[in-house]
Amino acid sequence: MQNASTSTIRRWEWWTRLAKRLQGAGLWVELTRNLASRDVETRYKHSLLGLYWAIINPLVTAAIFGFVFGVIFHVSTKPIPYVVFYLGGLTFWNFFANGVMSAVGSVSGNAALLAKIYFPRIVLPTAAVLARFIDFLFSLGVLVVFILLYRVPVHWTSLWIPGILMIQMFFTLGIGYMVAALNVLYRDVTQLMGLLLMVWLYFSPVMYRLSGHPQSLQIILLINPVGAMIELERNVIFTGHVLHPEYLWVAIAWTGFVFLGGIALFKRVEPLFAEVM
Image (cartoon, rainbow, N blue to C red; front, side, top):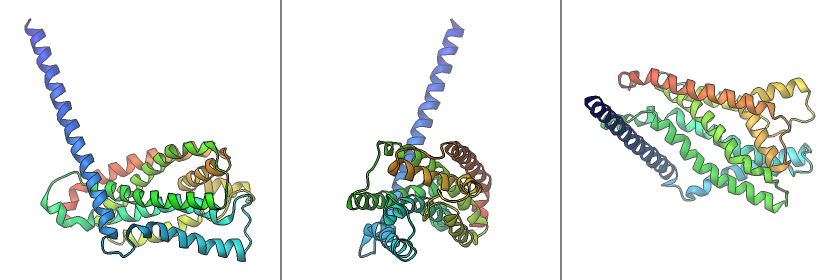
């Protein structure tokens, strides 16, 4: 009888602890959502055009590159118009690049907030990346408009986009955790990431297509997880099939490694935040 009573008490204690953890997790999720919303509001609060900048920036960039590569250099991406082809890569690239750059200063730029209240510091880079996802949704609307404008056929495999985006989200978060933690210790990480992303852009098939390049070069470009995901995202939208499915698994492996590694590095550096800041 006593053993049964002890077992019941233990089960009750376990359920109580689980309920408290779930409640705490819910609070951190709500905090992350609020911080992401605040990030977007702050970014565009005193801007005349506000969130329209999330549309204007990719629109102007696509127009410039479309003119330079499509009109002047006659880069062929048939049957897809070059401006649609480029915008298809730029939209997904910008989510990654802008998410990483926002995450860099997410911790070091919130010293006052960190001094006031305690919360898991990893919420800050997470909220920064999620805020750029909101920008991405507006840019995605621009891509849809151009697809309709040029009457480019879209395949049913576009339904895979949310799944691929989830992989890209976790990869971006992993990089974001790393650079956010390192930027607290070394403030030149911001400048370094700006240069690295510029090089990374040219090693990703954003403004050019892979077909026509030597096989060895294609392998190098597709080992790059961001390049593989952008190529995959553009393929499922415009061609209806995946040209290099094996590199999806490479991208997933990279994503798992980077995401878990980013969390581990952030947790390792986190105790030093108070000393440095």
